[in-house]
Length: 219
Image 1 (spheres, rainbow, N blue to C red):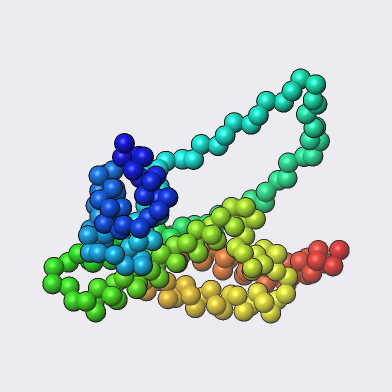
Image 2: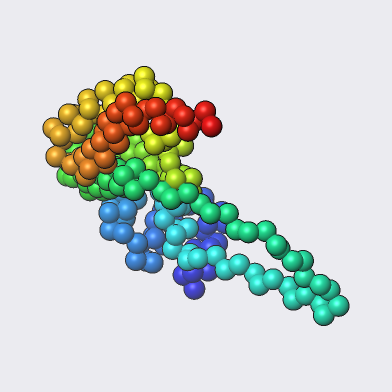
């Protein structure tokens, strides 16, 4: 019965309080229940809809219609493409950032219900939570791109860069970033990926390797 009510609410999600009550009855996260108890905002409504959609369970795909005996199925002679291997160092860095963003967001959610919290402080927390939610979505998209294409979107992987000037620019930026990360214990998970990238660039900057890369690019 509750499942039917849930589907009905999602079809026309007008009453925020009713949706929050459904979420509580269906055993949703206590942290989100505390958020919804604070009342409706644009952010809390968006989260409520997303969480209730998750509670509906996986969508069942309809079974394909059977093909009549007198019809011949098309033959697919194409070979499946081989996806490039994802960069393990990049994935490690992305997932460390993703965990840090999610952890901070969870902590801020809990702080929203602190007694005596002023409206201005609550607004700041809500804005930060929204920013972290956007960051999480971007990191998830980047992670999926790496898994599919083997590298981050938009930027040529360091392994494919042959220009010495570009390599030195990246090296300077990475060394500077590594120094900053070392001062942030919560970002310690990123260090291994940064160091791997630095080591790769230094290897590529060796005179013999630069010549090999240039010759390979010209071939």
